[in-house]
Image 1 (spheres, rainbow, N blue to C red):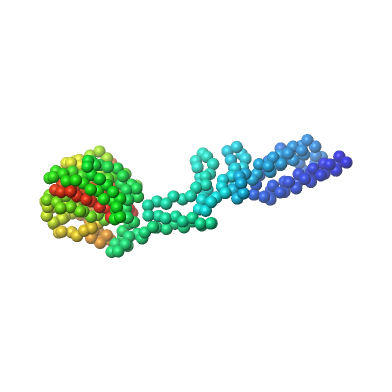
Image 2: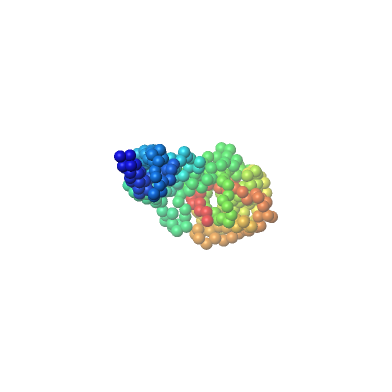
Length: 322
């Protein structure tokens, strides 16, 4: 009778082992290894049997349709069940989390049963510039969220882009801008800008670099002492102290909006402009090591307005990085 009891236990033990092995449960560790032909000790058999029961009772973890993972204690854990659009996302030093994707600027995410659809909320541009324009830029999307010399200037995300409204500074130079740290080199920034103004002096709107302390090196769309607009590459000792020009175009009455480009290839920085957004005319280039801001000074990108001669509204209508 005792031998039959052992046979029943051994059969049950093997059956449970097969069930555990054939399922999606985590591997169960038995305290005693039993081999064919071995006379089984009842204490060992019962210890293995109880270990299997404990393993089965602890797995699977979580509710129906949960996803299993090994917890920090060595047992099974469960995350979910997941709702439409949820993914299992890692969390450093912690358990995986059930989270949905968060859309950025110009992106829409639609979640469905077993599916996620990601799409742009608008085309990459529209009308004349649809092949080269970015989505409508915002302060959050571009990272242009830090003020330089704000004063009474204001900024807004509008239907056409980021607008800086800078009150008149009379005949005094007075840059107000928004800046962000540069990306890793090499990179090129192409910006479509417009200026709303009635200047009697040298009102300018442009993009360029700011060293994070005082100095700027920029390309601007500027009125010529109240006359026809021109392209300039300017050096500034501070937002209120112009230093010199590296380049001044003819007063060609360039039409608006106009494309400005800055580029850093890791060795040189350059400035260019375009009327079509595709074909750019380079107007100045210099080695960073000998540039106005120094080797490490080309550290922030800036979009700005200089209301010298009258209230100036600068609008950033496209901002593309490549």
